[in-house]
Image 1 (cartoon, rainbow over the protein chains, first blue to last red):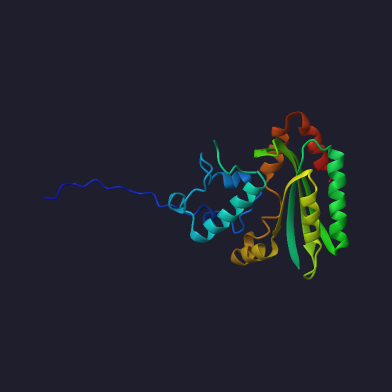
Image 2: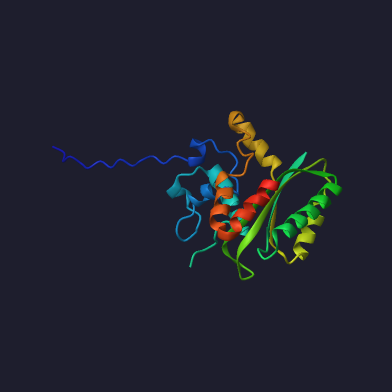
Length: 77
Length: 142
């Protein structure tokens, strides 16, 4: 008899932008961008956030623009 | 038609009236170059995410620009901003292509982008402290 194996249910990650139907990631939307910059102010990788490739690209661009205008930090020290 | 967004950050020591005057000057330059101002927002005094020129705050102004055809005076405006040491940062972004692409994907939810996120204005007034009320008033005027 096979030992009952522990089953891990991994929650499927969904791209936030696809779910919310956001097609233009605005660099002015600091609240939105902040969800994708953890403590060290680095851009949260796709493999963790579950953002799809297209939206990650838009997000990356928006974060970089926001950084230039000092809306978002480059680093935290 | 091309649309642009131009955001610039002004030294907080510059008085609100002078910021308005400066904005006016840039607007005139833009309209003289044959473009229209479609939007103007003043976010007032906002805390910078990192110090620029040893300053921790800045006054943000946003201009929406619509220009017909290829020619626009934006490069000239940028040139002037670069020379103005009261301007800490500026950023011009062309938005028409991205917005069109976004609209074609989800036609129903297009146009959602229009207004600036509500958080910004609210943040500006709460974070500003003493300057907050005057900044809000300036935003109201516009």
